[in-house]
Length: 417
Image 1 (spheres, one colour):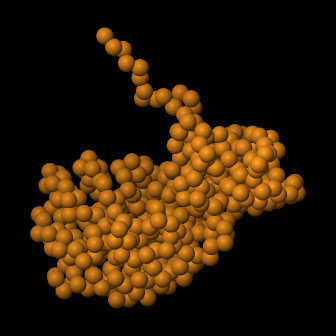
Image 2 (cartoon, rainbow, N blue to C red; image 1 turned 60 degrees about the vertical axis):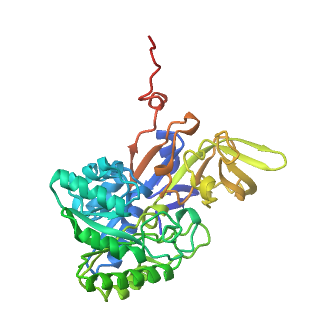
Image 3 (cartoon, rainbow, N blue to C red; image 1 turned 45 degrees about the horizontal axis):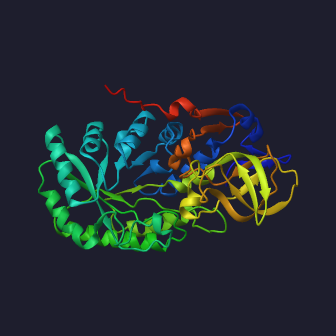
């Protein structure tokens, strides 16, 4: 469920008509519903109410500090993958003791920043990273709390680019090698073993891969216990999918039931989950305006948003629903919805039955809250778009549209002598 609905044929976000926002802020822009964000966060978090857990929102999916602040106020933490995401989470007021740091390429500077910030745990992804963290912790004379991210070699049955739990993926340590690295960690003076981590991919539409991976992780934890290594946190990552088109992903309650059943085998562990897309995906849309239409061998609807604003269709061949902001019964046309970028790969929809659009009409690109703005860029020297948050009958710009001047901020023309 989301709070984007038609009232008198005009698309509303909660109680605000979308055309009113477009008139005030211009197009394109990302639009988020606070009520939907709240509802989705609570649906996931409360599904695990019976077990000790921390819900750490995956910052990479949607990193605006206003949204991070909303989740922090609901008791959530953050799953981060860079020093920049740590800065965002802390700026948004997220409790550092609810922040976990994942990612295969943490730099010494990022490790130092996270240690100084007092985060809950590092999800370490290689023996060399563990050694680097030990060195930084020695320098700061602190203990670094770690979980090793294990790769269970489980097929998540998702797009190859967002699969992370197969042996051929770059993430984590092979499960048959991880025990040895845990033994190394136990012998390090400034490393504190806190947990085990595992994340197998994104946009999963069945619980079976989650069950297979958690069973492998729990069996691994039992092996560690026999070796005298105790585990306090079991981080199962995120990955629960959403409906973009015809998918039928499990509800959070079904997902939670599957994990909770397995968790009974490790009653001393606090569960960490890292939902992202499932919370924000259908909580945000991209509003764009029709610039031109043209017809030849095929029909094109040219809008002012492009692949730099929403990369998923070009990058993954991803589907996003397209709706008219004002439904005038204009009918449908088979066409490509394309942007201004100088690339044939610049499209938001291809060979689809789309609302007939005329110059000036507003279109809504649905299910764009996850990996929309956070993956956007300045390609073709296009300023990044505004972000807007609605709560009830009010809206607020939570990120100003970039200006031409911002495009060259930090650049300079050398004054050679």
